[in-house]
Length: 299
Image 1 (cartoon, rainbow, N blue to C red):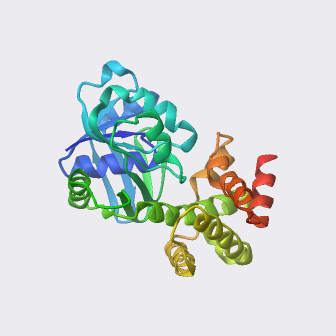
Image 2 (cartoon, one colour):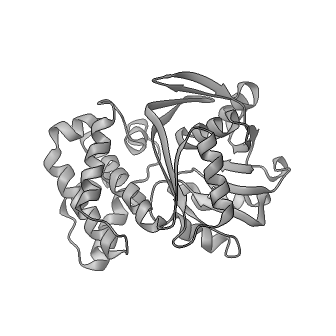
Image 3 (spheres, rainbow, N blue to C red):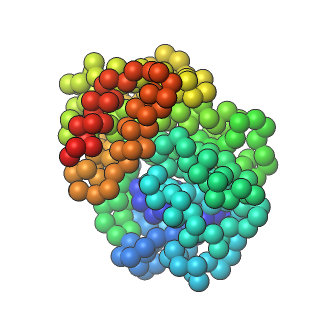
């Protein structure tokens, strides 16, 4: 398949490297020193089990760099960059190109549908602890990535083919027919951990060890809002989140926490503010999330 990946950070860089290594035709959109490093040497991925390099086609977000139309375009950008990045990627999108957001948040597919109303749009989520450690270099902690993508209902053939490509690349993959619920399951994990690691300025292991009551409370707040938004979530999903974070190395960061520490723009509105606002809309109290959100917003 011809797969475009927009966003060459910890998620996009890793997916591009894995897919390119397995022989898929991957176009990775990057910028600046990152773009030049990937063009020269490819993407270097370092994991607890070893390191490897792979060389996807590295292209800039300048339209003259897009020579072909893609079968699927995966958006691995921050939520606040999604719309601008999608518009710049328009030259690689044909009418039949599938568009799949893999960024954090629960409203990304709707944003793409507004921009490309005639294109097929799926939704997606990736579970991976990874970050950029320098131009063209991705650090992955844990056992790699788990990718979930699909639609609500019958799964179209192109998405099945994309799932096969992911599996061939060694990426644990689920092609889902109930993607709204699956995306909220990921949001349950990432919104809670991103908010609490950033608020307490501590890694994921420390949040679990020292702030368990707050973690439990905030997970239940997100659960309640997700149910009101139509996701089929239950207590088992909270138990699964706790199992997942128990497997992550103690010092694992979240991307939002790293962005706060670096003084960069963050996904605070997508990962914390969204829960507060949607809770208000549904009459659901979110006191722990609100305290964290307002504290972080004032920084």
